[in-house]
View (cartoon, rainbow, N blue to C red):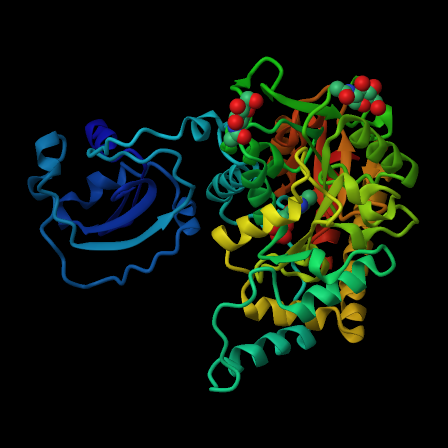
Length: 516
Ligand SMILES: Cc1ncc(COP(=O)(O)O)c(C=O)c1O
Ligand SMILES: *[C@@H]1O[C@H](CO)[C@@H](O)[C@H](O)[C@H]1NC(C)=O
Ligand SMILES: *[C@@H]1O[C@H](CO)[C@@H](O)[C@H](O)[C@H]1NC(C)=O
């Protein structure tokens, strides 16, 4: 019997006349295949002793096996202990195959002769959010009946207003008509939308329609910008920061290896942002780099840089001849008078470009539409305009944003659309306040949240992955460990305010029970 267990290493559940064997699925070590065998009457009693795991385990996997009345003669004579017997097990009915965790390794016998991109091999364990998702999936296997609440990745949850989806539906339907059909659009985006973005977000800042490149999202633009700067460019990032800057830099080959001892890649400047410096880096100790990624309101700390701080940043970039890539993906969450765009700072057009997105403004995380602003004033050391090179990248590697999301984005910038947009943002901001108040009442030091949908909570001296695991285990709430955003995030956990109100309230109730 123990031999059977080693052959079928996962789970085995028996009932009176049926045995379910849960085994690894084909070609994917993380897929579970449920096999069902019918037992001969003579063997039923003996196999019941093999009930390794409770039937409860099974409920995590949808059992769509239809029970057939035809009984097979599986496990004849009860000789089940020999390995050779395994191959003769007739799989009478194979059931569902469910992937429960993201595969980390694939075993294939055949290998090509293509060597792996060494820069890809430098990347650590995996992109932060897939790793969080993997742990969530593991947790759900462990607690199949738990009501898991995700306040982790920071994905929007509220439906897109009808006004905007109907604009997209209309555009989609027009594509079925002779007059309404369009193929490739302008690589830089539709003129009307570029104009609407320029006037809505950069009204009196001197940004023109022609400075706007519409895209399929800020993350995609960040990678295209890395391609534009090339593998020779040097980078500085806030620490902690949104992981896409560092990872795209590694992929481009701008960095050395990951240094385990300090949790940093060689050749990237990590500008520490902590409560001690008001989440704004001490620029006097930051060495010169070509590019400075700067995100405000910040993901993950939720902190927003003041006008005075951004003025210093622009001056620093000018003194060093650097280019700032300003990420304003959360600009509309700002309630005070902090700048919503780097171009509010005088002189910024010569040293900065800006990337932003409809994702967190109006729930376009799945629809995909964003933009990048590159002022004509911004040039490389030889005087060549950055915008011209970016245009070339966009034409070569992208071909422009999809026309349907662009129709949605345009309607989002109409007066009624903007009202909806601020309504949705206001809803998430109320969520943020509920989370902040909860942790404040529990005596935690709580940061961010005022101008951003993220709450940054301090757990001094603790490993952020440990805190993440503790919260998940005890409350079934998924958060994000601060350490995933860089060494400066250690000791912190990020809680996202994107969620249905009932989930936010329930999560806060559980936090109060855990930390009371
Ligand atoms: C700071 C920051 N920039 C960019 C993005 C990516 O946005 P998009 O969905 O437009 O690619 C995100 C998404 O979470 C973000 O937090
Ligand atoms: C990288 O820098 C070296 C040394 O300055 C230079 O010779 C080379 O042309 C640069 N490569 C690219 C792709 O710009
Ligand atoms: C970068 O700017 C700082 C502050 O303005 C200055 O002290 C430093 O010398 C500059 N570094 C370089 C290499 O230009």
